[in-house]
Image (cartoon, rainbow, N blue to C red; front, side, top):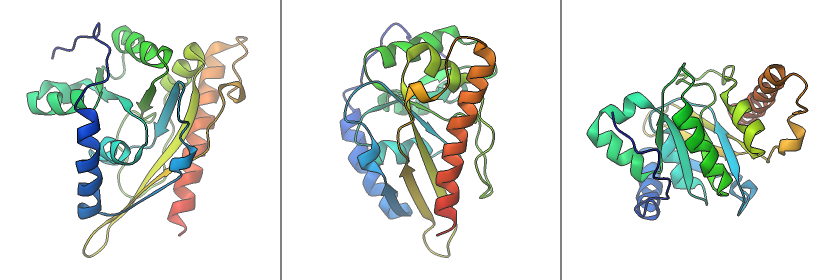
Length: 211
């Protein structure tokens, strides 16, 4: 796998990818999106979403009014076809279960430029129609070192006879100042911030599952 972490940019094909993905999502799924108005029009932002399927980033790209740079598992970039697709979706690889300094620096630079970073805090896909699980502390760490606000997002899917249901729901922004970063016990604060974010995602999931 090769990825140039020194080249931080928004790929030119991204605006042309979003409309076809939106159309495709409406064909494949009975698709809906709620809360687009909750996405701030400008400023650095972390979008934190649960992860249930390979198509999750595409659903966010199709429905989010801002360009999103995704943290994606490095294994996806070993396939040249997937690597090209994900690069054009502004994704970059991260080595899971490691202290990947290159990806952390890349993510920090994205936020320092006032762009949007997309993260799946669970660090893996959770299938089976179950609520989002516990998130890892990486999102708490990034929120702490960048001062970025966090927008919780939930993807909910339900199998049906003809077309499955797919809902993207953006919650309300969690201000960085509400995540409890005081610099007293950094490890504990990052863990608690991650829990706050995941709880908000779970609330969105439960709201949709009760419909």
